Image (tube, rainbow, N blue to C red; front, side):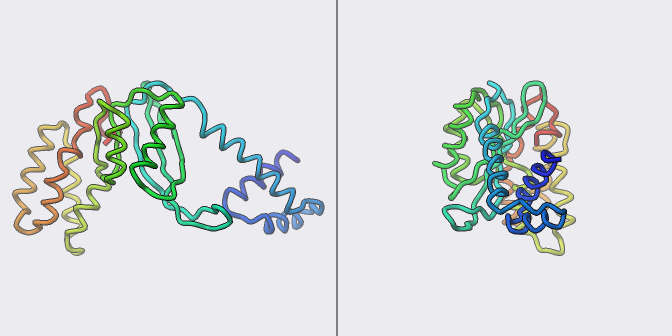
Length: 235
């Protein structure tokens, strides 16, 4: 029962319940002796689990990495700051997906991304075939420098958002349905042909959207060149 209580307290803490409220919760369950200090001690044990996760050894090869950021409020130096939390997910050679890193950043820059990738390599990562991310300039530079010989895939979800920003609201849904078909084609040649037909059809109506599509199209089609992997699962 003590182990179960500790797990409940840790779970509550992870979900944002304050130590003061946890103390009240324990009292409502008939537990009179638990203090805020004891709650803090119990939750500090989570740090050990986090450090074990953050520093565990990695496989030598992850054919595909997905890199993206969450934006969260984080307590830092007695203040609550809005910070980017970079998440790296990898797929190993057996096809297993795994979260490789969850790292907070006070700023998104080439230097912070480079540090993130250096840490992955220090933990054992050597070979990456394809990295998928948005087109953040600092991130793209860090990928290029950190993983020489690796291809970069512009994430189709972020790319679609960039394109649709130039489409009137009333037409977004219909255009998005047409746009999405580019990345659902069976191979690179068919996808390129479909995209060029779409650009020819809409370049007069939506010149800015089509300009964005044309500029980033090639980067968004890189996943087609990896025939040993299921395109639908990596695009």
